[in-house]
Image (tube, rainbow over all chains, first blue to last red; front, side, top):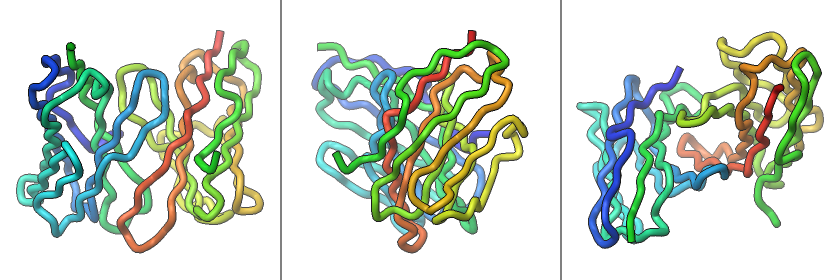
Length: 111
Length: 115
């Protein structure tokens, strides 16, 4: 079963707006990662945040992690039509060796 | 291309037939993962290897599914007696086991359709 719950399931915004996606998880983790998937394609790693980190930036991406609430958010600033994709959070559990994915947020950025 | 390679990209098979998929990981990666993904869902963990050792297998995985990584390089995933419910995208990923913070690199997937 999946660990992560993502919110919203779908998000539609205009180009230039910011997009925020949230992820909640259930167990203690080593890290949380965000991946992007274009329709019918494989997943592409975006960013990894360790359990002892609270915020991380990469280009237009900003990720936060709140381990007390077992939640994370991904912010994409100044969105572009090319950002249209599904976004998944994935957790690496303490003592585990695999990534467990959430259900994903389908982002649509309209030009 | 030095990324994760999966073959075939698409497979259509009749119910009851066996199918085998192949995954070639990034050469220096000794961890290899298999996931299954259905439309609108996140990837569901199936199994993973470190070198040739299969370290974990999902409890949800039917005994019709078997995976191997005989020489610690490429891996195969076989599904026996396929059922329509096996129709999905099968994703392979690889990573380095450097500490506990692993970035996984995914292949393009094999889309299986069971008719």
